[in-house]
Image 1 (cartoon, rainbow, N blue to C red):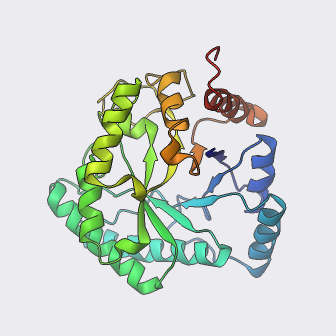
Image 2 (cartoon, rainbow, N blue to C red; image 1 turned 45 degrees about the vertical axis):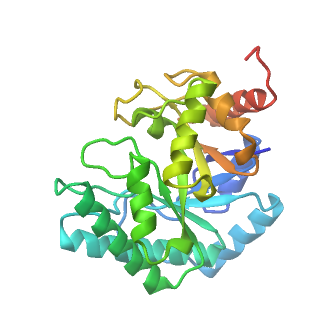
Amino acid sequence: MPFLGAHESVAGGLHLAFDRLRQVNGQALQIFTRNQRQWHPQPLTASEIALFQTAWQECGRVPVASHASYLINLASDKPELIQKSITAFAEEIRRCEQLGIPFVVIHPGSHGGDGVKIGIARFSAALDLALTETGTKVTVLLETTAGQGTGLGSRFEELAAILELSRHSQNLGVCVDTCHIFAAGYDIRTHSAYEQTMAECDRLIGLKQIRFFHLNDSKQKLGSRVDRHQHIGQGEIGLEGFRNVLNDPRFSNHPMTLETDKGEDLQEDKENLAILHRLLQHDTSS
């Protein structure tokens, strides 16, 4: 059975994300290890690391991933931004190492108008520099994207090219965001459409590369190339799409986290996770 959870806030301390996860009955966690809107956040303190480890242990060592800062663009057409991004991503990897977090999710970035091929080459080279600098055992998960603007990663072919170009492919994997792949044109709403999408992913990337999921419905239509998350079953994907993902035996041990709005007292996380659990149990009354 997949591990279902959410991206939780670390307001007040990293360790408090586990308290919030317990409040929503979650089994997997995604966090920002630092403010995702800052280039130079403060280093982790020994106290923060110790509190995080204790809280994680008390929470049963649930699967945890970090999400890299949205500022980072390793495919940028601006050399100074690439260098800042390499430094920031290396720092993110080091924080994951300090905390013991095995996965860090990153968007493949934006090529800025220079084209997909050039953008992929820049991203792969910059990613390799960050990984060489850290010598890490942390697994970097390339997130599927919706394809807005000049963003990379909306096609399985693009992720496959990064995996092939990188000299650190053993440190790489993929995070599938359901909203993003749907907005990019990959249908998962029916069983046959879902199987076709996964067959294409397997052919180009290999399903073994998928290590993590973001479960988000989509406010926009199939192929819209617009990234707008919606609550489970309230968007264009619908409940059947999530039933397909949740009951796929190939992903029965994968962490899957929500990235939807939380509402007051995390109520919307609770409701979304309850719906997912019902779908997992094949409750057709949902």
